[in-house]
Length: 326
Image (cartoon, rainbow, N blue to C red; front, side, top):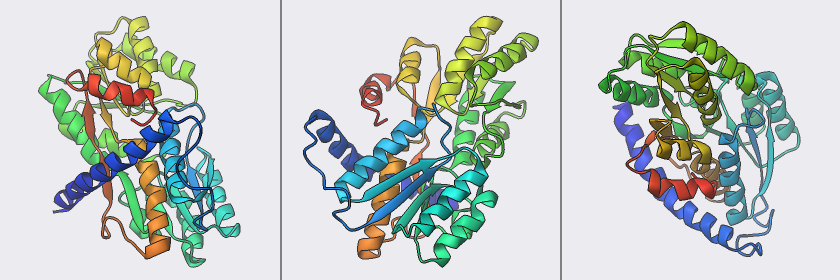
């Protein structure tokens, strides 16, 4: 039943994404800065807080969607980030202390963020979750959620590579303690029991490459490398070449470079959670809640993925990655 309800959310958000994508394309074509609304013209200020690791291109898309929504709705957007869970909690508390009108935040480390989110709701500041924490957002007091069902996404990858003969995938976790990343690997393992997890430091690309190279050189039975972020997939490509490994590479998330690697056949496929949509809808939902009391999703999470990108549809999607909207 839960899966059926969540699937409905995918249809809803994709329809909304089509509308938001149109707005983004128009502004991208007009470098004069026309269109949209002046920051703050709605009277609302929204704090947008993530666990972004500097250099991870995934967050460029999340932020681009949030900024476009803020422009469309006349919202003043205050963006901040820290991959350290305790520091992210501090950013949430600072937003509460600054008396913002709403907070959109990722919730990949829910236990560490629970106190700060509770502080926000106690102060009457509405909170919307995105990207991580789909199973915890309501317990923390967040009103709405926009993102992917990570377990479902992991199962989807697992079933697909199992159908392609996978026996011993390596699932690469690049951030310690992230419930979203762990759920992805658990989903893969549920479909391919021989899945092995590998922890790496996603903030250090050279260390990721070295660790992966050593693992692939040592164990030639690894037939797939499943990375949980596009930059890590690029590291995996380098590691595979250096280790002369026969493993195929698949990844969660998409950026322009990975789109090119899919077209070139170096990455078999990516599973996209549409981060631009997550940023756009998180801000838009807060604006609509503050203005009209709207509840998007009706008490259920709104799914923005999973969506497969492979050689059958890469030609259509590649131009959007160049605009930083996909």
